[in-house]
Image (cartoon, rainbow, N blue to C red):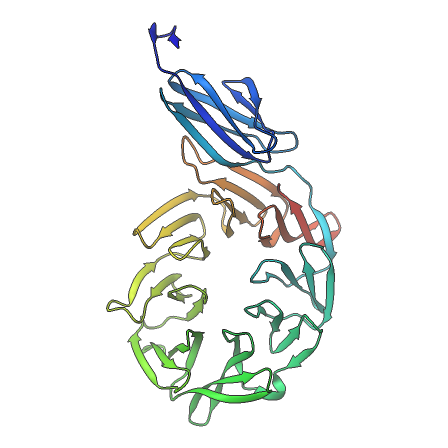
Length: 409
């Protein structure tokens, strides 16, 4: 094309867009060009002179996507995986005070804890089942067919409830699922120290998996071994024992005067969290150098894959790529962050504060676009479904307090 501004012939370029939802209107420098394809959501804007363009995508009832993109001659600039988020109003699913909301491992069921019962919502059909039981700390079994509610197991298939107090006793604490979902482990104090006991749900029998002369502060069962922390506060150790033998295989000293917790049990590394100092230790106990990574100033987060951790502290959101030894600051806020999610599009994250839920695009060209999905006086327990098109949270809107659903796509 002839460039009238610079008075020369220039090789043209283009911009390729792909959006969800489809049929979005494309504007370049304020001028409507065309819509994205109604079947594929894509469009190529051709014959653009090299330079910087203000591009915008619009769809009725959706938030606008807009940024500056640079076009080079003889090539196309790509803006793919663009998600337009819906401007919608939340719908009340269940009314009443809620103490906890948790999603099943396969993200198909939602457990809502109330004072009088545990409610299970099928996210596909939105059918709700009530299980009478005072809601406590709720933990899903690995397959998602049972819930450990404090010291009670609720079988979601037949509705039966099993009180573990009848088998474990009042001194038992820290109940956790085994890897196959048919076993429950817990810590128990004995006359000679501490025990980690195992309860078989099918046989209704209990046995000792491990004995320790020192206090056991936390544990995790993984790949046929028990990982546990024990000892006085000034001499805490991380130890590994075989489930079959109960014998110690390996141990290391940990920084003293801290409260340690095993988290993210499904990850390939041991995730040991120092709650006092907000430090996450990533440990490969069978490596010559067991400590693979230390993540400082971390309040919470989730693994995107085996090597990437999305995490946050009070005012920052980061991605830590442990394979490539790279940490990326995504954003810094002036309002405390409550939670983060990884969006299944792989190009967005979702994060919440005390009164907002927001999305942020990971494409950093010109700026990372942030969209406020909802703002209320207070939002608690936000959760996103597997597809990434619906959010669930606890809030009070007007006089109605309860579990709300917000469609974002």
